[in-house]
Length: 464
Ligand SMILES: [Zn+2]
Image (cartoon, rainbow, N blue to C red; front, side, top):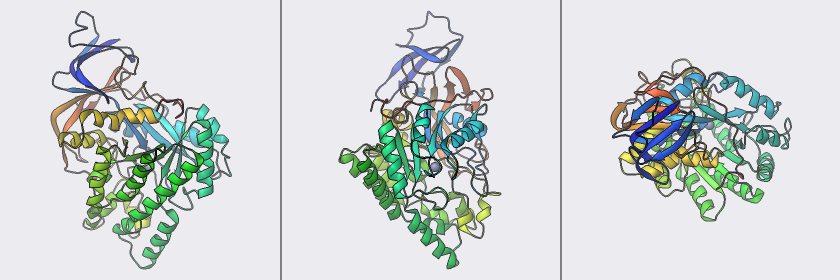
C-alpha cells in the first residue's frame, strides 16, 4: 500500500518546508520537493494544499479506565484513544499502577489486558511504584526488559499512592543504574492530608476546598525535594503536571545547574484557573483534579516557562469522570470527588492556540506535543518526527477551520468538558497511524483495536 501526501507544509521540531511525503506500508519511505513523486503510482493521495503536516502527537500522561476505590475513569482504551486520534494524537503512554501487596508484573499485565485489542492508536506504559515491600527495586529490571522504561512515584495521596522519601530514593537509585527515567507527582501529601482533615472537620465540604487544601507552595516544596533526592541518586527526573510558578522555578533552577530534570505541564494549567471553583452549585467539581487549578499569574508563568523552554512537554493527565454520576459522589464532601479531567482530545488544538496567538513558534509547538515526548520516552525516531524510516503517523492540520469545544460534539466518553464553549482555530483534518487513515474530516474512520503496544528504549539508550 503506497500513500502520497502532496503540497503539504511539513513541520518538525527543527524545520518547516514545502514537501511531499511518500509512505509505503507503515513507514515513511521518502520526502521530496513538491511534485517529486508525481510519476509514482500511489493507492491513496492526499492533497494537503494550504494545510500543515505534523508528526502524530504523543500524549505521555493518560489514565484510561483508571480504577479508583469508588469508581473507574469513564474512557476506556477504545473510547479514549478514538478521542485522542480525533485530536491528532497517535500515541499515548498510560500509567500501570502497582497496587500495594502486588508485583509490578501483575500491574503491567492488568494494563495490557485493558488496552489489548481495544486501543486504536499505539500505546506504551509507565509503571507506578507504590510498594517496595511487595516488589523490591530489582523488579524494576524486568520492567525495562518488558519495554517499560519509566517509573512513576507519587508524593501525594497517603494511604494509597504516596511513597516515602526512602522509597523514592531507592527507586531513583535503581532507575539511574538501569537507564530508566523517574517521573514524580510532586505535592507534599502529608501536610495536604492534614489541611484536608481540618477543612472537613470545620464543615468546609464544597469543591473549592479541594484547591484551598492543596496550596501551590506545597507543590514547590515537593518538586524541590524530588529534585534533591534525584540529584543525590544521580537519576534523570521528569516532573509531571507542573501547575504553578513555585514548582516551575524549582525545575528551571535545577536545569540551570545542569541537572537532568525535565518538566511537563497540561492545557488545564495554561487555560483554566481557580476562579472555576466558584461556579454555581456543585459545578466547581468539574475542575477537581490534582494539582488543582491555580491562579491566573500561574497560568502566565507556565506560558512563559514553555516559551523559555524551562518546561519541555505538554501532556493532558486525561482522567475523565462523568459529572452526573461520578463527580457527584462528592456532592457533600469534596474529598470524595474523583480527581481528574478529560483532555486527551483537545490538547493539540489548545496548544496550537499558543501558535495562533504568537506565544509559540510552529516548530516549538511540534516539539512540545510530539518530538520531545518521543525523545524523552524512548520512542524517537520511530515516533515524534517526519523522516524516512519513521512510522507514518501523520496529521494533516487545517489551520483555517474553527471549532467550538463542547461536550455535545466531543468523542471523549464523558458528559462535560472543562473547555465548554471555547473556540479554537486549527484542527486535525486527516490522521494517519502507521500509514492507515484513521481520521478523515475530523471523524474517526479506523477499525477496531488497530493500536500496537510499544516497548520503549531506555532513557540512557535514547540520545539526549
Ligand atoms: Zn496523572
